[in-house]
Amino acid sequence: MDQTKNILTLVRDLFDVKEDFIPLHVPYLNGNEKNYLNECIDSTFVSSVGKFVNLFEDKIAEYTKANHAIVCVNGTNALHLSLLLVGVEKGDEVITQPLTFIATTNSITYANATPVFVDVDKDTMGMSPKSLIEFLEENAELRDGVCYNKITKNRIKACMPMHTFGHACRIEEIVDVCKKYNIELVEDAAEAMGSIYKGKHLGTFGRISAISFNGNKIMTTGGGGIILTNDNKLAAKAKHLSTQSKVPHKWEYVHDDIGFNYRMPNINAALGLAQLENLDFFLENKRKLAKEYSTFFKNSSVDFFEERESEQCNFWLNAIILNNKEERDSFLEESNKKGIMTRPIWQLMNKLPMYKDNFKGDLTNSEWLEERVVNIPSSVRALK
Ligand SMILES: *Cc1c(COP(=O)(O)O)cnc(C)c1O
Image (cartoon, rainbow, N blue to C red; front, top):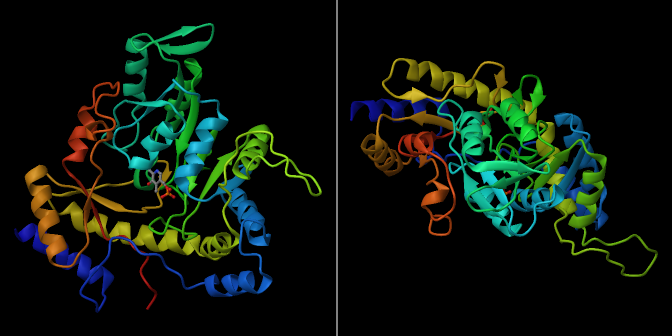
């Protein structure tokens, strides 16, 4: 198809690399990474105690303007811990979106709760407040201020929307719905480091949120994640639970809860600190790439996924919307064969064997996007 050929030529031009293969997203490690890692090794503080860990937390809190930031070993366990912290218990239901990476859904299962699915908006790829309201009006009831699913009889304890590829979902409306039904809001902001919506960093709208610093995200600690919250008590409890719930003592091993070994090591935080110093450069660089993609796709029958008004997206992964599944499949086939890495959006969670029988609302938009959305190369481009 001519159109595919034009897109592939564009990608090659934009990245202007000699290698045959253009990856979807690779980390950019040209700042203080080596300096800080060396410092870390020289200090012998390579594990979860060390200056970089605390410094990284402070700097992320400062950047996101969250009152507290608590590091974790990865984004998945940051989500798991967040759910426990807001009081999700065995037998509860957590409302989430079916169009997401598996970790969102699995973190709910790790908390011994059941994910239930409501639809996303087509223009955000994130949870639709309208679908959420419709779902709750149809299936939920409040008894003594506690929200229950009338059909399954389970308590609906929390709601976990996700900001897909760094694009904000309609989070303010979701905040309002959750308040009305007394449901805790946990934002999966794993993909949203650096994304601003209405002047606020994503992940600071709900009671608690998690960001991921996996190697494929906009900035990386190798592996890592962080919890953001403005709640002092939750923050203290997060730190406690993530460090085996050890009670400070001069020598005794005293633990007062079933905690976790979830705290990020100093080595990873050292890497993260260096990455954070370059985050604004990454954002500028990626937003420029997105603009170039956007200009090209304006004259094409393929849609580029734009940011909405009042949004300053990190454009972690650029996304295009093909016209149907056949077009999508042939584009994926052709681009990957030609050495340009492209990937479809995730298969819907409710179609996976583990989650196929879970309670769900109407998922028309999720299905529509699942068949059409493809990510195209999005790495930070080296300065010439
Ligand atoms: C990456 C990601 C996670 C998990 O983060 P890890 O650090 O890889 O554990 C969770 N949710 C979403 C939506 C993600 O993209």
